[in-house]
Image 1: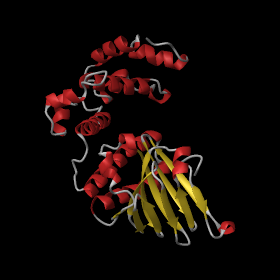
Image 2: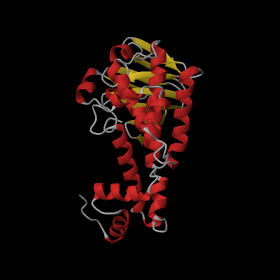
Image 3: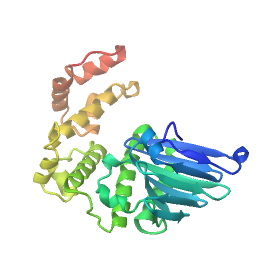
Image 4: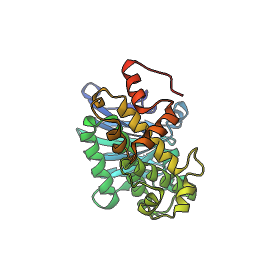
Amino acid sequence: MSNHVMPVSLSTRHPADFRAHIADLDLGAVRLSALTCSPVLSRRTSAHVRRGDPEQLQLALVTRGTFQIAQRGHQSVVAGDLVLTDTSRPSEGASIDEQSTVGILQVPRSILPLRHDKVDGILGQRIRGDRGTGAILGGFMSTLLAQGPSCRPSELVNMGSVALDLATACLAQQLGTPDAAPPEARAQEMFQRVTRFIEYNLGDPDLTPQAIADHHNISLRSLYSLFSGHPVSVAAHIRQRRLDRARAELGRPESGGHPVQTIAARWGFSSAPAFSRTFRDVYGMTPSEYRAASRTGPRAFR
């Protein structure tokens, strides 16, 4: 715990009988852990914070047993519910049953699109897990902990984005202000939603800036504004991600029997000649040449 999560001190009345198990899922920007343990008291002091701080908000779901949590003057007894803590502040927690299980969603403070001063007000407070957004988030966390080990890494990254969205919605609801995020944070959140939507729909030849704007109920001008602070435009982003996916498929041995035009169409290119020209402009060789080169070893591409 101290080496891989954060410095803490743990104590128990019966050290010889103590048992604990931790499982961990890497979800890209966030992580999800499951902790099952015997009765134990955990303390994180100011000295621990100074020794090491991952600067995370940790949203814990107690699925078995009972936990007591104290932070920032708030004390809660949690069973079947959620509670939010901050690694940058002292805290104290205890599992008091013979065996308790808690799922912990670890969210870097820097990516949560909510005002920090508002979030601080609900640290250590119980969040009901039997209704509303708390139940939705809790159900998702439980399912992900059960099914995550069978998912591919790329799937887990996508699930991490969903987990972050659900956690944001749940916490915003607790704050009583679903629009509590500052304007720049809301813009970043919308940008992330748009890029995820693009990623899931690259194979649709009708994926245009207008279609994206319509889906997210924003104007085309607002969509262009989202991308104004990024290296490429929305259209260029779509084109590059399609090229990336097509190139990856061309390089896989199992795709050798698929014609180039089939692969191009799979990733949203309606014209095979246009795909070949664009591919050559970006990678310095045609799709067929790239496929042949990938069979003989790495090459330098301009």
